Amino acid sequence: MQRIWEDHRLSIIVAAIVLLGLLMSVYVVSEEQQAVVIRTGEPIGTVNTPDGKTNAGIYLRMPFVDRVVRVEKRLLDLEMSDEEVLSNDQQRLLVNAYARFRIIDPVRMVERAGSTDGVRNALEPILNSVLRQELGRRTFQAMLTAERGSALENVRINLDRQARQYGAEVVGVQITRTDLPDAPLQSAFTRMESDRQREARTIRAQGNRDARIIRANADAESARIYAEAFGKDADFYDFYRAMQSYDATFASENDAASSIILSPDNEYLQQFRGRR
Image 1 (cartoon, rainbow, N blue to C red):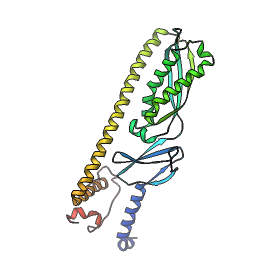
Image 2 (cartoon, rainbow, N blue to C red; image 1 turned 135 degrees about the vertical axis):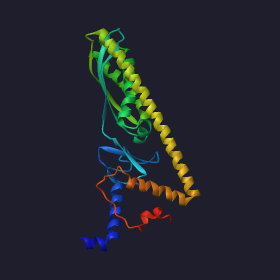
Image 3 (tube, rainbow, N blue to C red; image 1 turned 180 degrees about the vertical axis):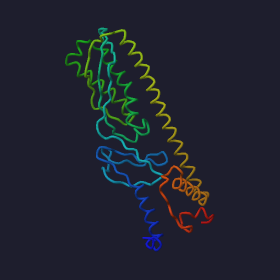
Image 4 (cartoon, rainbow, N blue to C red; image 1 turned 90 degrees about the vertical axis):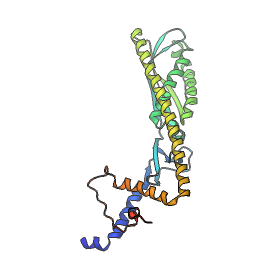
């Protein structure tokens, strides 16, 4: 074994580097997922999206440069539990409802919400608002008749209109329970607390969306500056990229049990020698 290592040291090192690069370049997208490939803060491609040209499978990316964001392709639930709604006949109703949605534009979802949880946080107060508005036009008795179906369709249309800006499509809204509350005063306090929490989530979701937009613009500007620097001083750009690679390879947080054995004349260490 020692002789094999001495005779084929360079070949083994090269093969290990190639294998490592391949493992870092390959990613898998399942049938239940869709993916967005992001480079320097900008989406450059999608995989397995609705009406897209690619399907689930194995794909390649540029290691250390491309980031893959996986997005659920199946139907997702948005729930609203024990919310008080004032009907047209001034009845305080305790309503449990849910909506089902799916992501149809993962690029917009990543840019505006970041994740499916971000979409939920953004749509939850909207569902509550449109449901209150729609049920407030009808009496409690009307919600027990066929008129309930048309009310829920109106809620779905209004919610879907807002969901499109986050890359989502609302496919249905259902009410699981509509009751009169047992303790109106306590329910009122609970509703007030829920309203404040919902408002805080809305503000937080909007802040996260704005932060992602700002971060994406900054990444794009950074990429432009890197490109200009490469055009002006290619040697410095090569040196900077080599330092980033060294930092990622030899960082202290890497597994202490791992070892990398390289020849002093190895091409990978050329920046340490101070020459090209």
